[in-house]
Length: 274
Ligand SMILES: Nc1ncnc2c1ncn2[C@@H]1O[C@H](COP(=O)(O)OP(=O)(O)OP(=O)(O)O)[C@@H](O)[C@H]1O
Image 1 (cartoon, rainbow, N blue to C red):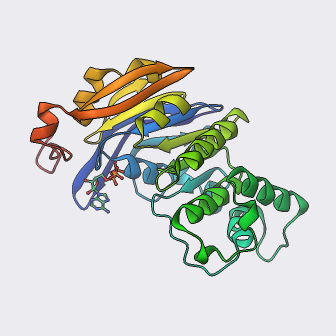
Image 2: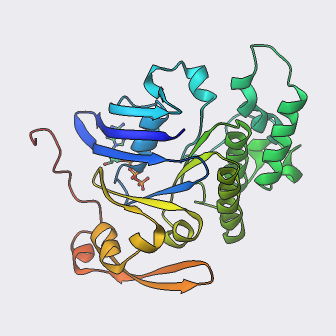
């Protein structure tokens, strides 16, 4: 009863973006996907959600995801994209209710269960007080929480969230991570990409480090968040401290390699290699 990603390779515009990525996510856990800009996090999420064709195997609850119809897939996976601008001039409640569409036949009215799922999602993302407002008139962070609520309302076994905390104020970043953890603890799977190392270390059960389209590490935050690993993957030095029940990580500077090459390394896997 897992998400199983095996030897996934993705090529876009003739460039190999993901090389041979394998990992699993179990029900009940929040798995964080970390890596520098351009490492391939969004590409991996898009491959899992069926937006990019991929070689290899992507199975969820023992079903081959690429074989499923869009509607069947929408009942299994909710996806929160990185770009979160709402362009439909609908109320917040109606926007969140779009998350229930995969569960209804065309033209069918919302059931009591649909209304409850919408209300729960509005509350979880702290946007219930905005329910009657036009979604397009909200701030960027508010819109981000509305779209997160829509993904939550979809009530799927797997939630894939691409940088759900970006653009949120500190309190709502914590609320977001807390919400993802609560969703997971109800037996769902959560795969979330993050750039904030402290959020990742404190709220994720396991972390996957992606670099240049390859997995550079996978394990519990305490195992992975080591100075050498952060230097290798991100090119940074960081202050790492244990506080309460988790780690706090504060980047303090660039390593020599990071100074030489702060951006992602050129892909060795471009056509011609292998
Ligand atoms: N449609 C596309 N065609 C060609 N190359 C692409 C396409 N989409 C992404 N890429 C390239 O794939 C690589 C990985 O991009 P991706 O968006 O997956 O990175 P990321 O890890 O999510 O980065 P970020 O942290 O900046 O969001 C980048 O080098 C990017 O330029």
